[in-house]
Length: 252
Image: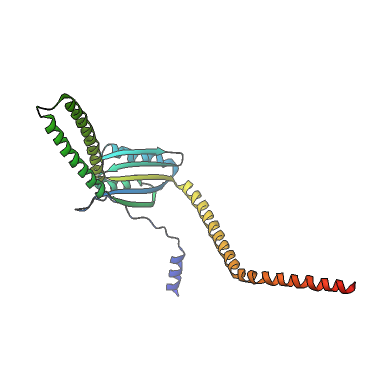
């Protein structure tokens, strides 16, 4: 009996599931994965600005490794900070941001950019070969002035395209070497209110869905009877008019 009471007491307690600590990720050999992390932290409203400032300062001072601030947003009851940081700095940065708060949600996603990287490399190789061919043509002594001018324009265009592709390649490599980390700070009280409202709307939606489902079920059940009753009603109406008309003729 004592054991049963302990089990019941344990089941009656509401337990909060805390997400596991977030950690940085690095692509394995042969893979080209760009990792992104999202962390939602619930804090008292008065502490949000302090946590945001501490996380921003840690990034700008490279406290946990190379880091760049990508976006900062701040409102009355929430704030957001997006950074790009080395994988080793993701976990300590997340712990710093979550001090004094509760992690309500965490998400890690990976985008495979191997096709984009390989396509960029192929385009650069083709342009480099084209640029080499143009240089060989321009070095010829028998080339006309008009052709030389046209070659110069083409070389400038190829060089511009190469610079663009090199910038794309550098950005792709940066995505592979670092992780994007988004920190969302929310007011605990605002979250509680919105959570209750959300639960209320969710319950209303469930009840509405259940009611519509039951109504459709009743309609589907009664539809065959309606289809059968309609011609019977028409037949009864025709017979009624016929007998009443005959009765009137006999009275005359």
